[in-house]
Length: 329
Image 1: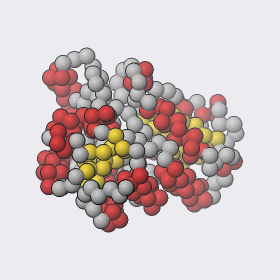
Image 2: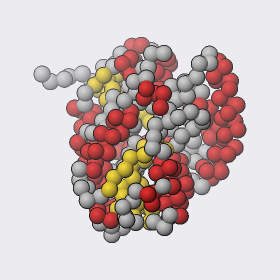
Image 3: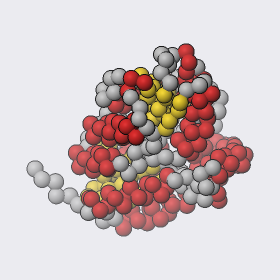
Image 4: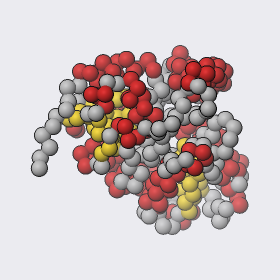
């Protein structure tokens, strides 16, 4: 039976500061999110404490953003992706930047003007976790009218979706060819954003989905040595392991004589501080210090197969309701 509902589309992403002035508000929005940092504090105390943390951290991290021109490219890249999709879908499509609070009022206004019976939502986070996709769903639940959230049909995740995997495989293959690297001489080091171990122990399936992505991508590279590790640990407490930094520092213990290490940001779809600074400056330098060669595959960003995967997911995905994605505390 043909679906005759009028549809609109929504891309949701992390967001990132567009200028030095937005670094502190970005960090405040991120660190005060109790889906990202879980404490037993009442919400007002959590916000008060982590606003102070954000103020101090903004001073330190501003130096890292300075390496990227004082801003993150993630906002512009997300908007460019949205423009490409509008042209192909010929339908209304909006973007939501979770930790860019200066954009939220405009988003709500644009969403109210989107007169569609159904809104299909795709998170630019391939692997589901309550700390990313779940956080956005909670924000929608809190700040949008229930009549709007009831229209939403989410693609929860697409960790092993065939066209998404194919996009990665061709992207990596093109990179290897460009750098004159053979499968048999490389380590494909897949680096995903980490989450606290507690999240997994309480039912978050993120690490399972990261492993599923890596297994699927590696099917195209039987001659390569593949590893999955997790980066960007923040604060005390144990996070999911192995940590990318530990894998890099101990690389001579397991590299099996291979001298070329290719970093692949498997949980990131657009480049930002974690790929352009953290991987480039912190992890690749460790590999080079061990006498090996280090490379970084750029994120998919505007890769044509990635765009095709999004269109397919919008049209064919297994959809769920907004309320199904929110962690109940």
